[in-house]
Amino acid sequence: MNRVPRQDAFLGPGPSPGWAMYLPRAPRPALLVLRALLALAAGSAFAQEAPPTWRAGVAVAAGTHRVFPFDERVYRHDVWGYKLFFNRHLATTGPLGWEVQLEPSVYLDRHRLRDRSYLTPGWGPDYQAQAARYARGETVREYAFNTGIVLRWQPTRTLSLFILASFGPAYVDTETEHLASGLAFSDVAAVGVGLRLGRQLIELRPGLRHVSNGELRFPNGGYDGVTLDLSVSVVP
Image (cartoon, rainbow, N blue to C red; front, side, top):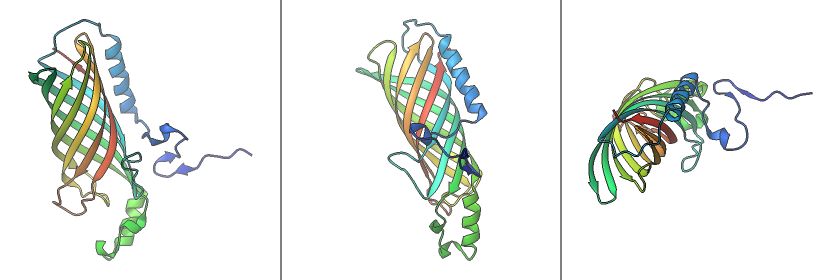
């Protein structure tokens, strides 16, 4: 008799073996954005042009905390993000270029408490009821606006390597056992590779992201995750 894979009431079928098990399932908007990014890349010409003074673009991001260096077992938190960004070249120091980047973003998070013992009587007389609610899972939306500095090395006219550090305010619409709703702060540190295709720049950017509220409200355990961004920007 064939066995039916175990279903997770909140997060769907259990992940298959291999690296794919660590990636959050893509919602339909993410697939549409990915198709648009690939279409833009396919229509580019390999022209050799000077580095742009400024550019604008879109990005899609996937994130999870279930991999090194986090591998958190108290809760499960997977993220899909959709971003606009505006980048301006500031200066060149030897082989390195300095850029500033503005990045408004929307993140759709799937969060669920896995270890109910995380909540203790210190959370109040109803801590068990709270734990049961958080264990059912929440859909959390984050609205962030990060400002960052990019340090880019460009060994050829088409290839570049870069690091990014950014910080900014965020608004979280739903409370979980790890983060209160309301004002929070988004921190991003990333490295990446860029490929210049005519007037377009395609970038792949793995990084680390942390969201917390700076002890403005309880709880403030925050979210940590490993992210992967794919972006296309255009020089006007």
